[in-house]
Image 1: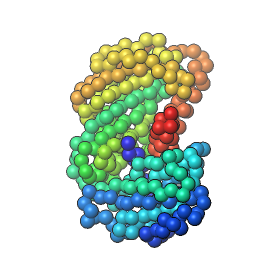
Image 2: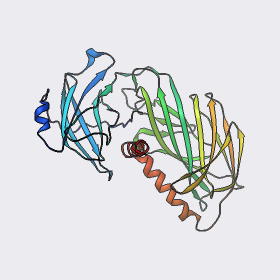
Image 3: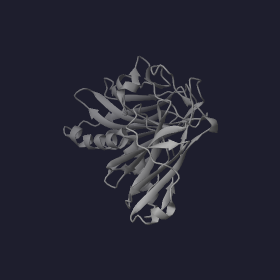
Image 4: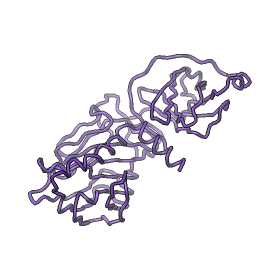
Amino acid sequence: MKIILLIFTISLLSTVTLPFNHNSLQAQSNFLAISGEIKHVDENKIPEELQVDLVVINKSAEQSRQSTIAKNGYYLFFISYGNHDVYFIETTYQNIKYISDYYNAAAEINQTITIDVAIFDKNEKVPMIENIVTKFTLSKIDYSQKTITFIREDIIRNAENWTFFFDDEITPTYNMYLLTNTISAVGNLGNDLFLQDDNYLNINMPILPGINTISTIHTVALADDDTYNFIYNSNYDTNVLEINIPTRFSKEIIPIKGFQKKGEKFFEKEKMQVFQAENIAKKTETKLLIKQIFREKNFFLAQNNIFAIISIIISSVIFSLLIIKVREKNA
């Protein structure tokens, strides 16, 4: 899965000349060479010069980066080798950030590895978009305010070969239906990209070809009888809809329409009840009733731990998705 990070700033440039001498690399003990190529659907549109950044994340999740200029699409970095490091390339084209696949600890010292990155033209033509997975996690209960909070993660796919974005940087590219009785809906990647109105959370982020990830936080009001009627609706077809609810949060959860209980799982030692719905057509409602919400006095402090954990995991595309994928790959 490509990892998408949307940033609109460009850092200081430094230049490396290609090609390189492999024999000189072998003489540098404990160094790693990372070479690669900027690729475009139309080869004639590769910029003659383009800034490229190499980002390195070590096992302590500390990040470092180097910059260079890609000459006619080609670039090269020399770095000090780290046994558990994760490497990826990022570049900005038409004011949109593109990131390569990552490379992890399979490298060896004095080795050359290749990491390419794809770029695409920006277009205001609406592409075919589908929700691959939409996942909600009930993460917080505030009984003093009679509210509950969901963390939402959308993995969406742009089936076309252009990046969907508007030059005005205001017009939304993705519209997310608000849940019933929504008090606030905000983005986890910077609220300047997210605008809530009466019906939607409007998102004006570039939608790149392939897989994109959107993380948001939704706080809703409970009904007078301390229940919550969860209703999911979307402008896009959804392959898998999942809702995770800690077993300590509610004593009774009733699937109303579309949902089925898929059992239980653990997340950071927290036991979750898992409900799923599949192949949901756009504009189709899927419903779940959450009843008998937990009331214990010290529950807010206890549940706050899971809220913090989940928030940390999805608050940064770079740190969360990369580190999780590395752990899964090494398991």
